[in-house]
Image 1 (cartoon, helix red, strand yellow):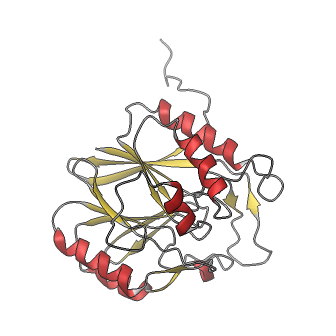
Image 2 (tube, helix red, strand yellow; image 1 turned 120 degrees about the horizontal axis):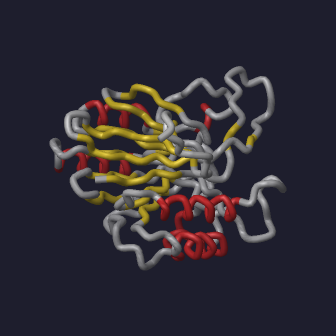
Length: 268
């Protein structure tokens, strides 16, 4: 089993760069090329929210066009920059989300790993929400299977990480109940999130919280809150997740841009 996580694409229409500088669709195109070149080929790609930047159907149409070049299935989650109704209208052909809920939540089997995707989007708010309906859905899905290795994916991280400009927009409503549910499910191998545009790892409720950098740009690392929220062109990354015998779920962070090498340590 091998699958990839990327996050925070922030796709905008052509000719409308983010902050006047960031060609988000171009960054996504380069990521798609990188993903298609991976060897071995992952079985799926998970994108943990902020798929587009302004929540419009036009942006989702552009996103569809760009993702169509991927040679593997794609599973999508919503972030605070998304629009739930525009997303549903633009992806009517997707059949993996749970039709029994108004939210974009679903469970899929990735060849022996169970993936539970949560919808933390709340219209008009940068912070995340898990209401009672969404939490009950998660509770029911966790109760269905207490043995299969499980990954829970969401956009907003559920705890502060020491970034004063970003911590107020983490998962707020429902965070304590979410923690209780995860603590009661020892087969949850990982919590995967985005939103922070940084690589961050923390222990959480008996498992590991793993936050990935964005595809579009990164947030300037400011642990003191000394300047306005700013972005930087640090390299985007992808994360490969694999079940390794004797170790469980192992995750490898990989730069999206190609680099020099590989070179042997010893000449022939």
